[in-house]
Length: 167
Length: 182
Image (cartoon, rainbow over all chains, first blue to last red):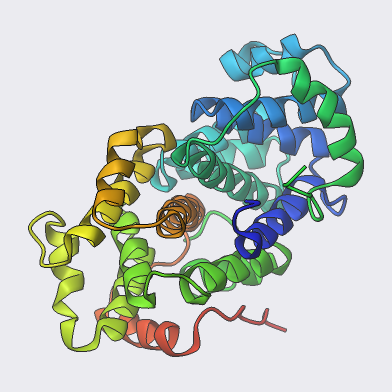
C-alpha cells in the first residue's frame, strides 16, 4: 500500500470505518475478530496476526482465545450472536452466494441488526481483498508473533486512517 | 430479496452503499482510482480484468456491468470482452494481457496461488511492477465487491439492456457515489 498511495488512502479509510470507527454497535474487538477469522480461513499469516493481536488487545484476553476462535469458534465462550456472525463471515469467505437466508435468520434471531449483518459481510469481503493483496504480491511479514502484539496497542490508539505505511 | 432492508428496486452495490454511505464512500473512491485513475493499463483493460474476475466468482451483477463497461471502452473491438470471458487463453488479446489475466485468475482463487513463475512470465512479456500491482489489486478488490454484492443477496437485474445502459454510464462518468434516498 505504501507503493501506491492513492489506492492506499481509500483502503485505509475503509479499514478505519469498518474496524475502528466507534459509531458501530459491534465492538472494535468483535470486528477485528471477524477480520482475523476470515484471514485465518484465507491462510494469510500477516493479516491474521495483525488483526488477531488487535482483537486480543480489545478483548483483553489471552492469545489462546483468539487461536481457539480461528480453530473452532463454536466451542469458545464468545456470545451466540458473535458465533452466528462468524458463521456468516465464513460463508462470505467461500463466496458471496454461500450466505443463505438460514444463516442470516439465525443471526437476526440472536439479536443481530441489519447494519451488523451488513458490516459483517463487508468486513469478511474486505479481508478477502486485503488477504489477496498482501499474499498475491508476496509481501514481507514478520514471523515473530510478539511483534504484532506490540504493534496492536499503537494501532488501536491511532486507527487506520492516517497509517504511515513506510514506517 | 436482499438479506437486509436496502432501498427497493436499486440494483447491486448501489443499493448497499445507499444503505451505508459511510463505507460506500471509500469503496467508490477505490473503484474510481483503480479503474479510472492513472495506470499504465488502459481503462478498457482494467474493466476487462474486473469483468473476468467477477465472471470467475460467478457474480452476475458485477460481471455483467463491468463487461458492459469494457465493451463500451473497447469500442470497435468490443467482441474481445466476450471472447475473454468465454475462453481467455484462446482469445485474441495480447500475450502480455493474457499473462496479467492469468495472475488475476490466480488471485481470484487465493493470494498465495500466484507463483513466482506467473510473475516471471508476465515480466518476460514486458509488464512492469505497476501493471502487476494494479492487476493484483483489481482482482483482489473484485473478490471483495463480488462477495459484498452476493453475500447480501442484492437485487440483480436480468435484462441485458439494463447492463448496457449501466456500462455506458460507468464508461462515461466513472464511479460516483449514489446519493441515499431521502
